[in-house]
Length: 254
Image (cartoon, rainbow, N blue to C red; front, side, top):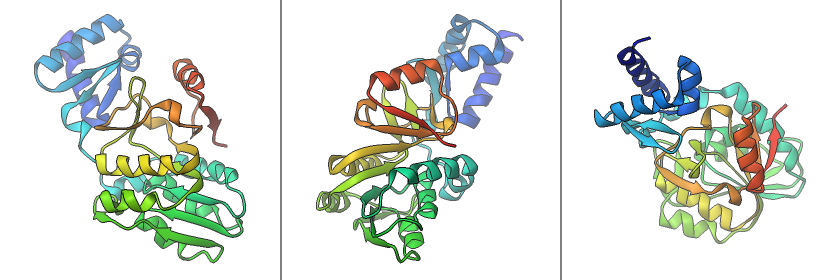
């Protein structure tokens, strides 16, 4: 493949996936990492991408949020497996936080066997689902409605969160980037998650394999703040080593 053809192919991949890693592209095109770096440098000079540590992101991809209905369908089977595994970490009479992510929303389908459970969430869809379950007391976080995610955010929501305490927080993210940690498209969503972390005893991240090597606009937290990561596919040795060194327990969904 000619250099120009490869660069055009990389651009097409970025339009679909929003972010790529050098290692992934090197394997995909059977070429050296040095060649890929030169390709990305050329695309950056054209104003099409932004190079990052270990890869690149589409310029529009940092803040372009995928619509909620699309996110609910994407990787649905993987999200269900992750949620089913996450439910095993919830005990009777627990008080837990849940964010507004579509992955965490799947967790609402695995709580019917829990007794006297209390859930605190800023996700409108999670509240609606949990309202059907008599074994769960639901506390909704008040604030400004963020329409793209049907979630409550803003200063009022952040303050409201700090009135509670939870045994565990279950949350997801838009992307996982080696040099930045867990990331999100929305700063408002990320700030609510940070407040939830501050009043939770244990932090559990639910993250399918498509989120790795994929940066976003805003940092949620470094890996060292995460206690447990539940994902659906075997991670690369690089990711496993990094997370384990950060004190993260890796759990693979069954």
